[in-house]
Length: 265
Image (cartoon, rainbow, N blue to C red; front, side):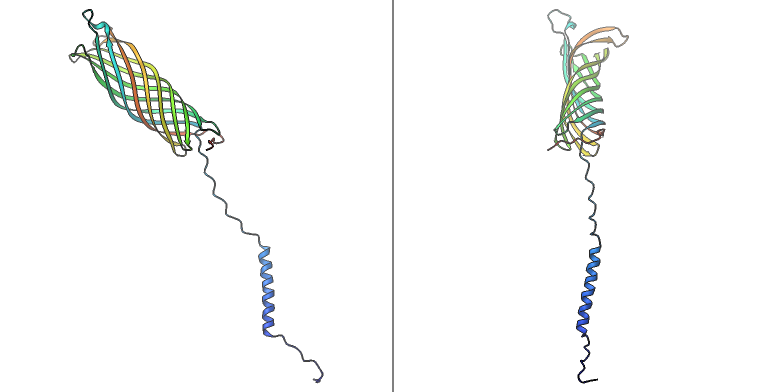
């Protein structure tokens, strides 16, 4: 080699390593940038809004009391004497079912509805004649029914406070005894009016629980009695009556609105 020739330069190991890092980093960045960003996980579906719109069917049980005032002013033997009379309050158990429909007005707290209710009852007791202690007046409420309109207010989405009122019917069985021997009997269905109030809680979709107080008044009605042994008109009694019950029950709701209606709070 000529002493005037330029020596051949060889790359240093550090230079080779640096170049490799630069090239590798560029390739990695290009690979990352070419990939699409990861898709966010899908949000869980929202719970359906609560609606009181729809029809329902359910059952109930409870306790009740009946107040009865019996009077027979024509039964006196001597002029000027008061006739037979007796008054008593007595209680027992009741139970049955109800069916109805509600409509919740959009954007309000207001719910309107209609309901029919029928309960069997065992409200029975004795009314002692104040003019003749040997004469016993036995009475029994066997069933009652109501047909009412209902106005409700949703104080919370799952809580409905309501009042209702309308027509009421009651079935009575009456028996009089003289010294324990049946004397005359009457079975009668009476019509009156009712007012009630309660609270209903929707504890599961389509299921609700309620507590309710009902007052039913049937006024005073003249009831014909037939002789217990062979029939035929015996006498009449003027009987004043009201019935009160406290009910607890459940309803299953068939929501028929296409779009659930929810009040704004």
